[in-house]
Amino acid sequence: MSPKERILEKTAVLFHQQGYNATGINQIIEEAKVAKASFYQHFKSKEDLCVAFLDARHTFWFNQLKEFTVDEKETKARIVASFDFLIFMNKKENFRGCSFLNILSEIPSDNIKILNVLQNHKHDLRVYFQNIIKEKLLSDHVYLLFESCIVESQLFKSNQLIEQSKKIIQTLIL
Image 1 (tube, one colour):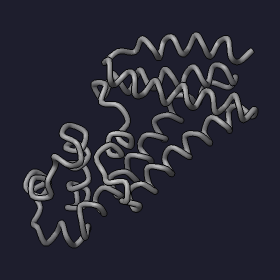
Image 2 (tube, one colour):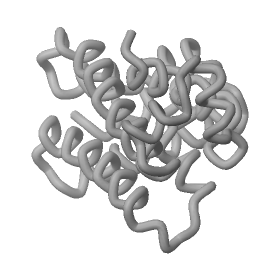
Image 3 (cartoon, one colour):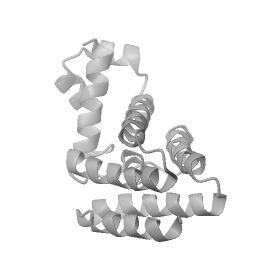
Image 4 (spheres, one colour):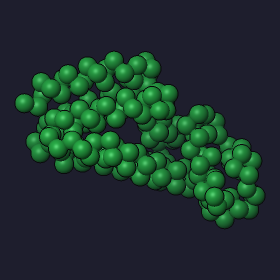
């Protein structure tokens, strides 16, 4: 792997395990086994590194979601599969929750550069549901249910609310 790829790979692990604020650039440099000059050749700041991490995470996450739901042609089945994707990710990532919301809780409110990336990710998720469910109010309802499942499952380290939400979906979409 190139130095940039090693930096991004190590950043993903450390931001996931420790969080954004607790992870220092020197730790990333050391664990990625790159020179400091090499790091700064690719990323001018920790903020720029965070944006690159979030961009990569966005692509990875949506590719995984689409791959997980692609075989479902019916609206209700695709939405339920989307919630099953949360269960899959919770198991895979040990209930770490949403990287985007985790970082949101760690940045100052005036960090527009990172905030824009976070907002764009959530906007794309909302559009994902709007593309499946044409009725805007219902698609927003499902989006909000999905978002609450992410937070609640991380908080309680449980998929119980996701399973309950799948039952709710069955009653929302006839």
